[in-house]
Image (cartoon, rainbow over all chains, first blue to last red; front, top):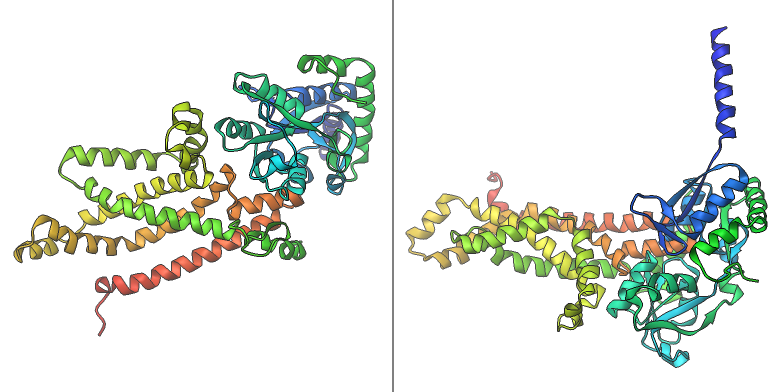
Length: 253
Length: 243
């Protein structure tokens, strides 16, 4: 009889574990204001906060883990976590590797450089442009600006490219506009720098905004995330998170 | 399991042919690793012979600073040294306005500087150890034929110490080869840097790092063989007598 009881207890424990489910979200370790690791190791920022709001709507517990951006898709596919909320734009290229939720925000990408620079095709000749490795900005920059004579310098973390911009090792950084604004231009380091040139949002490269990625075929989780996204858009929790970090609407049209 | 088509497609990237460019059209990959290694080993060795003499000097005003140098550079990880030189120094305005900035601006120079200082610290200790190990008979013989201090150093002690340092130095060379793999963290495209780029492009971690690993392994085999030959030639006098 005893093994049966033990088995019963085990199955009870298992079903309990399922009901108090923990979802693991990964985010870029350093992409302010979207994500930033606080001194205590906790992830803070727009992306982790949206993840928490989604989990609340899905009635699950959320764990948000930091991960360097260039390894985030392989790590998702290796089941290190269940979903990625890392300001990742929905592109066809990435759709081959993962499935995306509906978008949760949409921001253009912009060049940050010395204030007053006039950016046209001729400007790129001989210039060094810093980008985040594996980002849509890197892809766009390599495809368009290398042939104009620019060299593209890839970094593992966005703030490193700002350090090198300040040091004069690169002439401009190509980043999500919100990141350039919060992490450089609004800081004391941003003095003398500004957005230069136009906004970049060509759909082929930049997709239609950023989405939450899950493993290919994980339709159950994807449907729940999409449903939760609609809920937090409707009940105001999205707006509450947005207000913490932005003074304007980043969801886009 | 292993995607050989991917390996074949991306192989040119490791040999300086990124994005369909012809092989060896850039220094990315293998060439960058070899350049970083060769430059830092040559400069490091050149620095470490005089430093080793300083290290064994009886004058403590010479010996102490050298001791401090090897202590600090052997006591901290090379990655930390590289970050301090590349990201750390660039934060000071006076560094950026000095003549040194022309050089420190480049990630390549920063990497070679960090690697050179690191390897010269280890090599200094290797050579200094062998200088101390010099057989008393050699020194006595040199004195007996009337050699002065510097002549004895130049003709007897240093050549003999360098020969005996070979086995330990071959280890240092191989450690440095693996050590250059951190160059990718300051934007350089060495073998590991290229592997990371391929990994980021294809979302496949296994194949690119496997290829990079194979390159390092092949280079290690080559270096071990070269040092074996060198030891056979220059350390023969320490071997057992042939009948």
